[in-house]
Length: 132
Image (cartoon, rainbow, N blue to C red; front, side, top):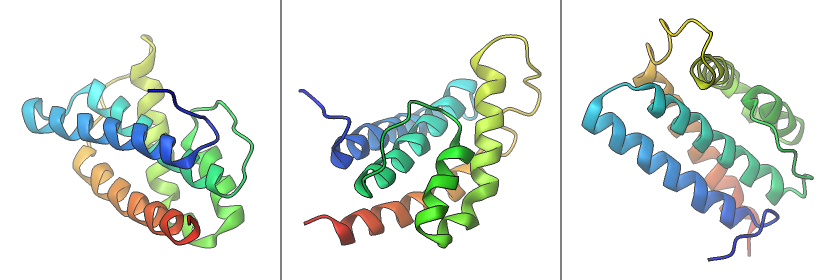
């Protein structure tokens, strides 16, 4: 299967796959560092799907707050998701490379997952309304 970085549906496909993996891991093992990373990567791809659907030029970045700023510039409703993006980005980087304090990584995972679900619902509604 060949994907296209300019196709929002390809980003959604990869975002949903990571979200499904994060959910399966949580159900199986509870909170894990890998689960936090999968959730972050899923939200990142959902945000990129939305932005690309609005003709945004892809930036290969992982900071959810930066991606959210681009989304807020298009739609103020995204501002409500700033706390999720900040927390998930901090926790992602803490566990991504050794050397950081892991004591708070995943401490609020159920809340982050719920907040991610709300952001994802907004993104999917917006993409579905604008796609033919």
